Length: 278
Image (tube, rainbow, N blue to C red; front, side):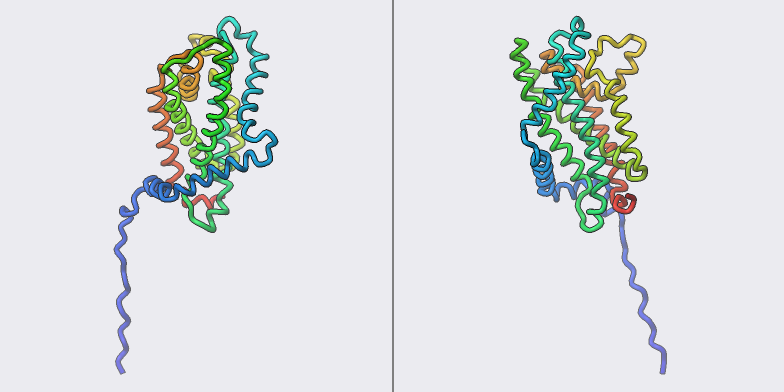
């Protein structure tokens, strides 16, 4: 009885190029899961105000109270260099708060969701972008009191207000990019999140939010000029305080897009490993 020959092994031709780059795949999946993105934003807003007595009004009152306190401390100091100091401070403070809070929340959400991602697939970037979109909602609400400040100081903004959506988009893109980079680093080094809080404190004083850029000496002006957050803050502040379009809005757009692309690439290239690295 002759032995039966075993069938030859089945082989499959697999072209990894058909899958595309991780960055491209993540973008396609994010578009597919756009309903999830809307639900995440809705959830974030509801959770934030569910146990708050003041509800949505807290988005207005919290930065407004911070502005009042800082104005009482610094208004006298910058009275001669910055007229109507509260109006100068408030837009910059809102822009900075959006950046600092959103990048921190993104890192916590993206790292904290690792256990969930072991059980079900969703685009990892959806959680980070949802945090940024939620922050934009709060930013829009917090800007409402600026109208009262404009009336109080008898200032009438012009057509430059039309650049505010672009300035806000630039701020959001830059924030998302930085948030993805911090999250990618925290994936391997958990202490990065705590270290980032220290960096944010130094970064605040390196950015003309509380003080005017005019007081920076010539010796250090170039050093401060490389701070991209300064460009983004000016994009929000210039139309509201100076009544003009920020002169650096074009550069800010390029910087924001480059930061977003870099953060997206850094995060998505190893996003599938996230549940197993945390």
